[in-house]
Image 1 (cartoon, each protein chain N blue to C red):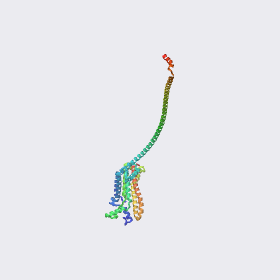
Image 2 (cartoon, chains in turn red, orange):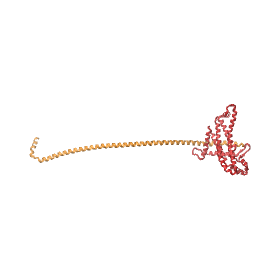
Image 3 (tube, chains in turn yellow, red):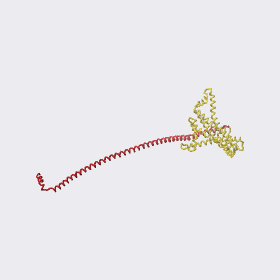
Image 4 (tube, rainbow over the protein chains, first blue to last red):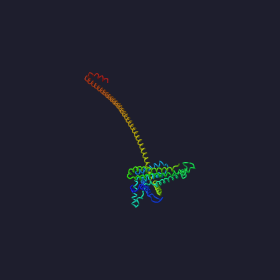
Length: 264
Length: 156
């Protein structure tokens, strides 16, 4: 808690959980979320693009092996779940998995490192260090998790309509589970809830897990010397959490999209 | 929790990343993986085939070796038989030759002996005549026997 020596615990926690915001009202931009997520996205794209450019069927380099392992893992997962033919789903799943994983990985950077550095830089540039905010992990920002979930949701709707037609999609929303005309309104309410629950659960699951994990890191950081024995096991456990959450987000995306492809 | 414009920014970023991944990242990598898988599968199949070929060749070689051995043994057998046959034939021929030579020699010896006997006989006759002449010359008295000679002359 290098930066928070003169802060109360509440102030320290609040400071860590506040985004670097620019703008007013709805048109507020979380610069830290945008910056770190785009940086991670570029890390993903460029590191994988480096392999893609030199990809050949010969003896792979070590980095190519690592990238190909990830790609093949995604490919197997997608093939096991999604039985249609689509050029979008597998790259989408790869992007989601690696991008979310990289963003989650920022959670393992000790909670004070980057915010403190930001405060130093901000202070040096003439800002009040107490109001320089830097919330590093983008997946602890609801805006990002909802953006991902909404992107997936749009694809779900799009594929449903593309595969089944608008009529088929509406029919799917109204004629089950009770296939009698006078219960169609009830079916529709049920199906809409089920439909909206998908992106909502996607976004909130990722956000909740990472937010809680980040919060616990911050709480551990408040313990002074005792953070040393506690930080390590929690970080170790968190390695599992961040990988698992990235994987779950990816798999559920594939599952939802394959459901959108299927006729019921 | 405050939902704000960040959501829109992230949505765009997400879209861009997915499209970039779809265009420039996924196809070459998965293509390379699939090509390599195909290559490995082909290689494994080829090695399987080569192994089978090797086994077949080994079996073939063994068979040929056995055949060759049998042929060799047969040849040796044949040669041995032929050898015995030649020896036997030679013995028979030699025997016949010996017989012939012996007979011839005997015949020659016989002929020589007969000729010698004949010569001897001739000489004995000549000797006898010569002896008789000598004896007769000594005993003959021309006067005493002139009558006989006279008679002979008379008869002429």
